[in-house]
Length: 381
Image (cartoon, rainbow, N blue to C red):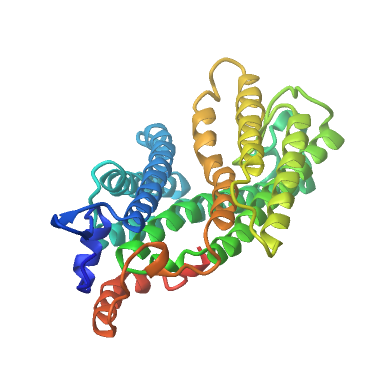
């Protein structure tokens, strides 16, 4: 293997698919793929593919709002929702493009990834608009609230409770989805900046606690909402749905069941993240997460939406499926990575790369400066 030390720019290019030169006796210098280089390239493709998938979900969710509001949004919250949907479509398409270049074309740059990571910050606009909509609904006249149909003659207390559950539900799902997008973009940038060792088993273990905590909150909210509806308005199917932004409830029993399942899965995930010793090649938790997501799609989305008369809620099914992906994907993803990566990665031995000199590392840090200014809390994503 050549002993020359790559520059920061050469390291980025090498990461995107170059191979190291290996010295073979009698044959001179020939190009052979290095195991560490292939491992690093596989990691980059993995993050790129997940960014492409999550970007597609973000863009798709925005299209429904754009189409439905394009002709009617003139002012106020409808106009703000339309503008937020346009921004969401933009960052979704941007993430799709950057993810595609990395996963399919084996190309990319810190500039493109920085643009993607920066555009993801626009996701907070639709999130804040949604919270504003919920807040206005909570303080509105109970007979005109957006959550509980007037035929139930809802009280002010009922509206406030359902609105509060909508607030907490949107917070858990939105942070889980936005965080998953940012996680993939920042991980790609970490590799491009020459710092792949930052994403070690310890790093993923800490993030697993956060995303399992969000999943637990989402399950608790849905359990509480379903129990309240059963106690107040009876068992399902209801005469008209109760809409809590990320929850469409025709059968509250389904909400209780899915809420309990999410709480069980997230509790197991938190316990696994607290263990001192990793368990490599353990797949049963990933299977459990897939089962949970299947139940969410079959029961929380399809079964609930299918009870709506005609096709009035048909567009909600694929949109909710996209919104739910992040919070269901991340616990399984983080659990696998924390159990199958070294607790402390040695870049030389694990990825087979030489460390950058102080001068070259300083150059790489300067390339990273723009991204760090955009989001100084990268490690909290």
